[in-house]
Image (cartoon, rainbow, N blue to C red; front, side, top):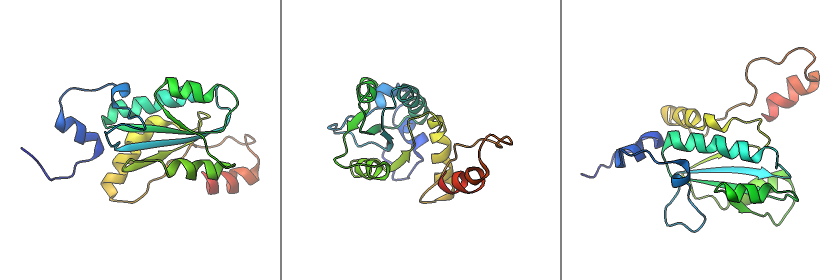
Length: 172
């Protein structure tokens, strides 16, 4: 029986199959015929220390969501970041221009998912929260939802006042 009802991404795959797939089975390659439901974009510049952890967190989210997903790493590194990302199933693209913003735009042009999540590869963003963010987006019918890397309060003296009260809230 075919249904035309739209279901949140966390439910859609489960309706089609009772079998839970691993994240590696749900990751979609660049030339796959499967259209990803979710695209996760990370610009990287020598993030060898954090890329593995971030992709593991994304895979945890993908297993919870049970939706086809592509991980796009927009990379300008000189270290092992792109090799590690590829080994873990990510699509690595190399921007033909410079800069953080350009790396994002370059990757966005290559996304195919209905939803796009983004964050840095330095482990300051918890990609395991993607299901929670998507659920909120679905519940509210919004076009965009933003998370924050700040959890709770910042201890006195941990960050310069200018950064704490202006920079981080405005940029995070």
